[in-house]
Image (cartoon, rainbow, N blue to C red; front, side):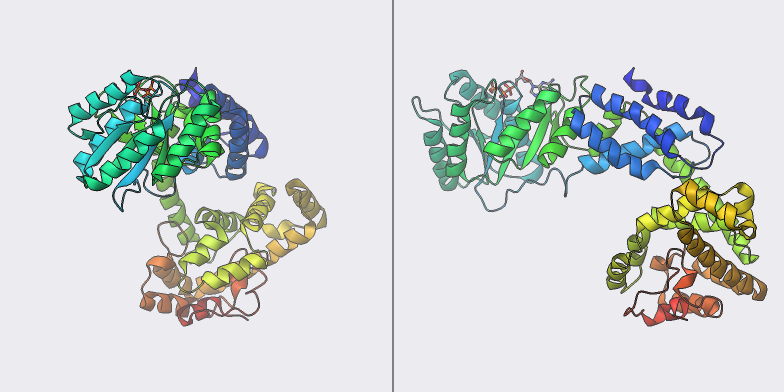
Length: 502
Ligand SMILES: Nc1nc2c(ncn2[C@@H]2O[C@H](COP(=O)(O)OP(=O)(O)OP(=O)(O)O)[C@@H](O)[C@H]2O)c(=O)[nH]1
C-alpha cells in the first residue's frame, strides 16, 4: 500500500498533465495522500501537518516538467522537503571528541540497542579515527548488562572499565573519568542503565551522571521500529537530560523510519547514526536521502525527475534565447524568467550570487521585493488566457479585472506587472533589431536560461553590460524590480551598465 504513494499521486494528477502548472486545489488533493503516507510511516500527526503545510507553499504554482507526471513531481518536492527537514547542520558523523578524554553519554530505553550501539561506535572511532576508547557500563540494575559491555569490548579490542560490585552509577562515572584521564584515552563511553519507560528515579540518576561526566556528546539511542513512542522518549530525554543527537537502531527491520522525521522536528536534534543489524559493523552515518526515500516508499523517482527537469530546462533556455534574439518577449517569457528566479533562490538568492550585492539583497527585501512578490506575479500570469499571455495588448479593463480576481489580487498589481513587461519587451525589441541581444544572450545565458553572472569573468561581465547598456535602462528591466533600485543602493561598476538607474 505504501509503496504506491507515487502511483496514488499519479492517479490524482492524470487529468492534469496538459496544464502547465500545479494548481492549489490539485496540490491539496495530492497532499492529502502525502499526509496519509506520512502517518502510515509513523510520522506524528502534528509533524505531518506542519510538513504538509511547508510543502504546499513550495508545490503550488510549480510548472510541470515534461516526461514525468505531476504526481511524480509532487513526490520529488515532498522528498526534497523531507531531506531538508531530516538533515542536520553539519556532517552527521562528526562527534565532538576533541579535548581528550571526551565523554560520550549513551542514553535510551531498555532494549533500544544502547549497549550494542556503544560498542559499534567505539569500534568505528578506533578503526576509522584511530582513537583510544574506554567503555564503562553504569547499569547497576542489571549486572548482566555490565558483563555484556565487557564482552563486546573484548570482541572489538577496546578496553572496558573493570567491574566493581556495589558502586552507584555516579561512583562508576567518577572512576571511569579518572581512569580515562590517567590511561590517556581519547574517548570515554558511558553506557547508562536502560529503563522500560521514562522513570523519575533513573532520570535523576542520568542527570547526576551527566553533571559529573560533563559529556561532550549525549546520544539518545532509539529503536527505529517504535514509531510514535520514540517522539515522547526523545522529548523527555531532551527536556530532562539534554541530548546532542540521536541514533536510530533496527533500521534493518521493516519500519518506515517516520520516527526520524518526528524526532528531528520535535527535538530539533540531528539523527547521527543508524543501526542496521546486530553485528559490530552494522552502523552507518545517517543519510537523510535514504530515510526520505524510505518514508515515501519510492524508488528512483527523484533521479528521474531531476533528469527530466535538466533536459527540459536546457531546451527551454535554448528556446528562450532564440526568442530573445529575435526581440520577442511575451508573458510566457516573463513567467519563465520569474520562475527561474524563484528556482535560483528568489530575489535574495539571485542577488546573493552577484558580487558585492549582499547589502542590496537586504535592502530589496526591506523594500518588499521578495519571493512572495514573484509568486504573486506568476499567479497573475497564470490567471491569463493563452491568447492574453501571447499578446498582452488585449488586456482592457474587464479582462484585467477578471485576471486580478482570478489571482486574488488587485488590478493595481496587474498594472505594475504589465508596465514591467512592456519595459522589458521594448528593450528586447530594441536590442533584437540591432543584433545586440544576440551578443548579450550569448555572453550571458547560462544553462538555466538566466544570466549566469556567477560564472562570468569580469571581462565577460563588462562585455555583457556594454551590449545591454543601450537597451536596459534600469532595474525596471529586471523582473520583480519594476520600481527600480531601492534608494541609497549602488552597484559594483562592472554591473552598473546592466542595472543603472534611468
Ligand atoms: N536487527 C538489529 N538488532 C539490533 C540493532 N541494534 C541492537 N540490536 C539488538 O537488539 C538487542 C538489544 O540490544 P542492547 O544493545 O542489549 O540494548 P540496550 O538498549 O543496551 O538494552 P539494556 O542494556 O537492557 O538497556 C540485542 O539483541 C542487539 O543485538 C540493530 O540496529 N538491528
